[in-house]
Figure 1: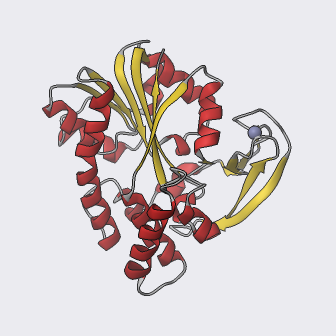
Figure 2: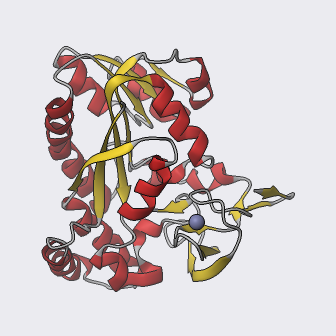
Length: 297
Ligand SMILES: [Zn+2]
């Protein structure tokens, strides 16, 4: 990486280290600032990333609507999202307990802590990491979660959690290799790591192209596929044991994408695209968003 006054240029692919890139596409921060951003594609391993990355990233999160992704307020899209989230909590819990029955969980990017609150009620020990101060305070005060700032991740002792999860978080983290090392270090031997990520190879991504809302530049720095994720973790001697879809995401992502395309009736088009995307993804397991389960050996 090369840092100047206003931006960070990625000079080496975070997955394979190669320095030759091609332009993948130009897009915009359709969600908030409408500023233009570019995505590069590694010519060696095909990993796609936002490049350059603006230095003052926090200002791209300073929107009521973006924060409402994490709380109960907001417009129709946010309310639908909140509803889906509560439906998803139980599903996430069931998935995790398939791999680790009970114990301790660290959720990195825990937001307002609803998921961890659910684990707590089921008898788990919980801890959260959340960079956003407002979200963190809700997690602490409303959901009784021991939530700390991201900079404290280094203070967490090694092999201290049975499960470490990052639900739609890794794509926001600047230093991918460093974060994978953290997660591996903190997870106990035979523990479980969970990564949920948008999938650049999904049918809805291909349909919407630069309008695909899960590009979400510049907040999403990295744009994974199952292939690139597996390459990244294999460098850290980790292996994927399971990949499963988050089927609701095809609808939510399509709804936002239709809004970016100025469709005045986004719900109908999004419902159709969501159904079609999930149907097309059955064969290759390349759904709009994927949950990857990784075991620590
Ligand atoms: Zn590469």
